[in-house]
Image 1 (tube, rainbow, N blue to C red):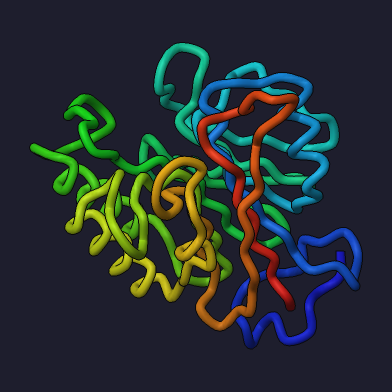
Image 2: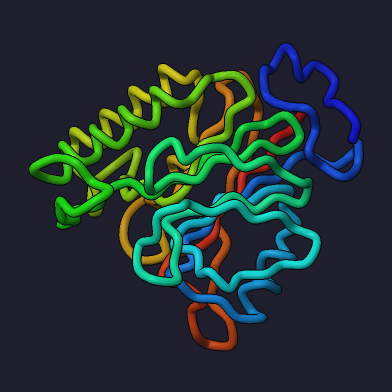
Length: 237
């Protein structure tokens, strides 16, 4: 692997891309606990260097990739989140039970599910309502994350701009404050969701990086592979 020119200045990473002339591309997708050859095909076709996956089935296999998932399961056979990388990765202790963390190519990747409206107070959530649960989860994450060479994303269940359909004001404020503290920003913030309003699936990268983001439909042969679209961030180092 080569190293991006100026990466130390922009604070992100030894280059993950397989070619010097190809920008680093990172994706996030809530798989909704589903897996099929079509899911594998979509992941491969989007040519990412890393994926921040959520609602990850235990039987996922993708040759040539390394997958690290949360120790805690949402339901039997389905992990909360996972980090999928082309480059071999080192698993790290989960920074929160609903977040997976791994290091690949010198970059720390964190994939998180955060509380949603009407989520209950069962583990791993702590708090009387969605706002308190989100503040608690984000606070736990920030304590375990360092700003340097960090990419954080997943299904945050909060729109970061515009009207809130899935999250709460206090939850959004906690997420935005965490991004500021970790010196990150989310290029996905202004993208749309597969259904209503803005996306709740995000990827956050170092604040000094230049990047573009796009939404990818997960419709296949007239049906949806998930109720979430996939989201890509391309970092131009």
